[in-house]
Length: 170
Ligand code: HEC
Image (cartoon, rainbow, N blue to C red; front, side, top):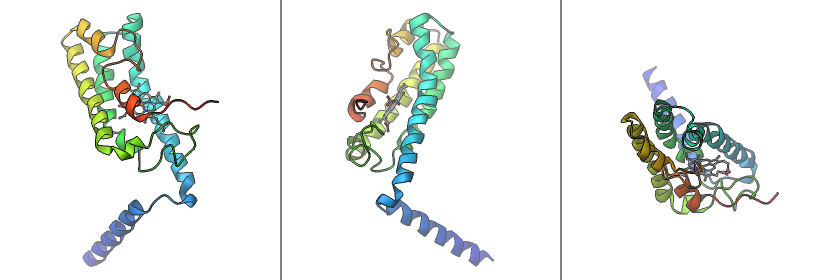
C-alpha cells in the first residue's frame, strides 16, 4: 500500500514536471489563450478592483484611511500572485497583439519582472502602514495626487512601462 502511494507520487511528479518542461505547441494554443484571458481578468477584477478605491480616495476624497489600509493590504497580497499568471511565452510574439499586451521582456528579464511585482507588494505594505498611522499627506503622495495608475509610485506604472506594450489598434 505504502509502496503503491510512493509509486503514484513518483509518477505524478514525473508527469507534472514533464508537462512543465514542454514548450508550448500549437495544439496547446487554446490553453495559452485561456491563461492570457484569466490573467487579464485577474488584473481587471482583482488588482484594478483594489486600486480603484485608492484612486477615488485621492481624486474625490471617497472613503477613509481605513479603506486605503484595507485595499493596500489586499494589493500587497495580490502582487505575489502576478508572476504565476505569466507562464513562459504567453505574450506578444507568440500570441497576437490584440490578445495580450505582455511583452517578451517579461521572460527575457524574469528576475526584473519578479522584482517589479515585489515592488508593488512592498510599496502597498508601506501604503497600508502610512494609512494606519493616519499620515494622509504621505498616503496621497504615494498613491499619486492624479489617481492615475500610470503615475502612481506604488509600482503599477514601473512594471507597465517595462513589461506591458501599447494597446493594440482596433
Ligand atoms: C509586475 C508587473 C505588473 C504590475 C506590478 C502591475 N501590472 Fe498591470 N499588467 C501587467 C502586464 C504585463 C499586463 C498585460 C497582460 C496581458 O495583456 O496579457 C497588465 C495588465 C493590466 C490591466 C489589464 C488591462 C490592460 O490595459 O492591459 C490592468 C487594468 C492593470 N494591469 C492594472 C494594474 C494596476 C492598477 C496595477 C497596480 C495596482 C498593476 N496593473 C500592476 C503587469 C503588471
